[in-house]
Structures are given as structure tokens and as C-alpha cells.
Length: 390
Image 1: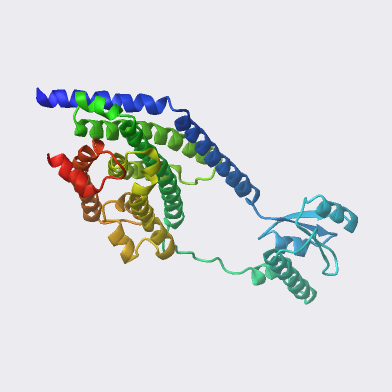
Image 2 (image 1 turned 90 degrees about the vertical axis):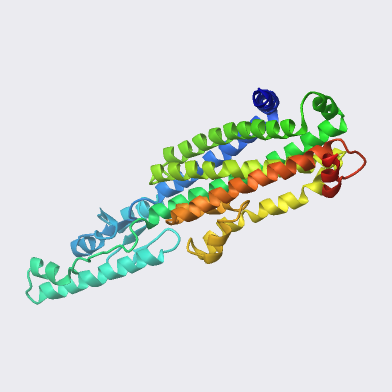
């Protein structure tokens, strides 16, 4: 019966926090702005990616079938009857370059180094073919003589492109969730401080216990944040797939789901720290002084993704960081996106995170309880613990 009553009180507090968040205009503004920025970036990436698809076009002037044939292996060839037509095509950017008789190449601004190499090789191949034909060789013989043997390509890592895409998705997701967690944490600390400074908390504590308040806040704010994250994830992944940025959308969706799974305990951990920090001050102006250590710890959580970019997924330091509670929520999903991680490391990291949350909620709940009813500047953690004991 007592447990049911406790759960009901927590549900009431959580519902209050959810309603407050969902009615907050800043909450929806952050969703709309962040989603719009991500969709725009994916749109631009898709346009730029689309512009770069396919080989460049090169014009060939006159009856130069040997040059055109040599070029067709690397570029799209357009034939023009005279130099005037080729100049018009270059000015209108219908072709990247035009090859004139005598070895002259027309370009609008400058000749790309790779394209210049292709044209030079095509001219050399055409010259060799013409020399062989002048010596009496038939066209089929010259083609076989100058055609290189087919390459036998063996890929060492067939999944490299997909792994890079998954890692990119995880890295971008970690950064967005980090910003969201930072903003949410600041709002939570300020909200707790506001309730304390306005003495509303005294009225609340007359009805519920301090741990009811803390647990309800964590559950309510976590549920609201999950709604926000799901909306952002669906919209941004939809934009990325729609604009053709992702070549392996199923892998990106799986990475996003895994990242959300790791974000939930990370969010609970930091939300608890921010709520406890807010209970230690009597004025909202002092919030920034007490959340500094929490911000620093949260900044350290970006160490994992940074190590993954710098040293790769097999970095030994990244392995250690991905097991540390408070840091693993960001490091482990990036590692899992980039490479295969032993199952025992995944399980150990998640278990350590849950154990850290259990300890933090217990100790943090006492600090929260002891700090809420103590006024007069910033309350020290030791004073709050002693106050909770009485």
C-alpha cells in the first residue's frame, strides 16, 4: 500500500513537470529550430552531393574518334563540329572542357588537375593508336594492345563506407543530445532554485517527501525530453533519407536507436546532478556557481567521440572512456557504430551506468532533501547531508 502511494505521488509530480515542459514555448522553439537547421544542412548536403554525381563532360571538336573513344572510359564525351560551338558550350558550362585539334584545351576558368590528367592520357592513347594504324595495324588490334587488363579488386573492409556513415550519425547525434542535455540541465537547476526561493517548495514538502519531488522531476523531465528527442530524430533522419544523404538508412536508424538507449541513463544521471545543484542555492542568480562542476563533467562526456575521430574506434583510451559511468553514454554508441565491441564491454558499461545512477539518486536525494529547506547563500554538500540526517 505504501509503495503504491509513493508511486502515485511520483506520478503526480512527473505529470506536473511534463505539462509544464510541453506548455513551454522555448521547449517547442528548440525542437523547431534544431530540426529546421538539421533539415537545411541535409538539404544542402544532398544538393552538393547530387551536383558531384557522375563523370564530368568534355567536348571534342572535329572528327577525332580516337580521342573521343579514349576519353569515354573516364568522362562523358560531347562532340562539336567546330571551335565556336565548343566555346559556347564551355561558356554555358555544358562541358567542363573542350579538346581542340592541335592539343589546345578550352576551359571557363581553370583546368582541374584530375581532368587534365585524363585528357593528356587520352591524347597519348590516340597518338599511339594513330601510329600503330599508320604501321598497318587493324583497329581491333590497336584497341586490344592499348586496353589495360581488368583489375581484380579485393576490398579489405567492405563495410567501411557504412561504418563511416554510422559513426557520423552517432557523432552528430551525441553532439545534439549533449546540447539538449546542457540546456535541459540549466532549466532544471533554475526551476528548482525558483521553487526554493519562492518558498513553493515548502508547500510541496508539506504534501510529499523530498525524494518524491526529485524522482518525479527526473521522470517527468525525462519523458518530456524523450518526446523532444523522438520528434527531432524522426524529422532529421527523414530529411537525411529524403535528400539522399544516407546511403545505408537502416544502419543510421539502428545507430540512432542505440544512441537513444544509451542517452536515457546518461540523461537521468545528469538531470539528478542538476536538480541537486539547484537545491543548494537560495537565489536563481547563484545557479551558475553551483552547476559549473556538473557542466565540466558533462563536457568530459565528449571525450569519447573526440577520441573516436582522432584515433579510431580501436583506441585503448576510448575503450576505457566507454566504460566510465557519465562518459559511456556518449562514447559507447560511437564505438559500437564504428566497430564491433565485445558484448561483455557493452554489458559492463551499461551495468556500471545503472549502478552509478542508483548510488547517485540515493546520495543525491539526501543532498536534495537537506538543501531544499536551508537558506542563506550557497549550501555546501556536507551541510546538506547533515541537514538531511536530522
